[in-house]
Length: 389
Image (cartoon, rainbow, N blue to C red; front, side, top):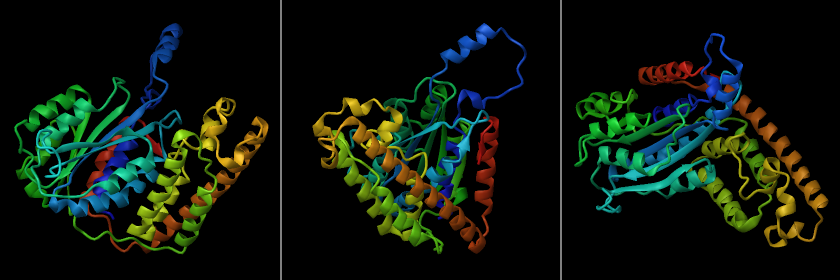
């Protein structure tokens, strides 16, 4: 587990460096209050951490993909606790690309956008589990350039924009020079971080480190085939049972409702099939502020905008609510919300005990690479006045 934390833990701690303008706290000299008000008014309503994951899906990368599936929930769970100096919390968006797979179009450089920037955790999980590997040409420069062109990185200077590219072939392959892609990334204020799946020195000699430092990013090397070890705890089974109860608080509505509710269940199953610990981590994510589904769940939708109840037509409602008055629907939704919050609180409390148990029983110390990585990322985070609670 700790080795893909070099990849996804990296993403995580980089994610927590995402910034709201309130994060850039400095001792300011007195200025005209009118200008201050104008400046604040011009700021976007939200600030984002935008992260594009570019994963090599050639034959040799099965281990990488499996670790990615397991580590998604670690990212979310840690990112939940990130906050700016002004106590606000930025939003996380993740995009996913695959490259280096013979099943992909040669015209597109053996590159595919799996999902654009999204905060839909179930869909991101679904896309990760859909990845398969097959031998191919691995064009690092081209996949970086493609993600720069296709994704909406936005123009807000306060957003933190990151690319993480992982693979094990020379960074120099392909017609597009990786240096050109790196310069283009820098122009868009996007930091490129590279993860070489193999020997650290080999990654340097094949230009993976160069690909990172050109944009001020980090270079890492991981053993992508190392067996992920999870520590079972006395709290796992209880958290998994609570997750089932949590699912019963979701009220699907609209054209997406049935499909998304089924996806929620499918991703629970995908996590459970990997290992119980992965199912637990997903359950913890679902109990956090990061797991919101206002597009299909009436509880989240009403929390976002109470007026939605008056706008729904009968066909949008689940059978149990059809024919009910607005006040009856609101009462039902409020009951489910209270039930959900109670379950989420229980899961969070149990997870605190679970994490303490893991810390106590963790036999292996963090390696030098992991220590160096977290140190570098937290240094970047401190520049944005980020903290974790």
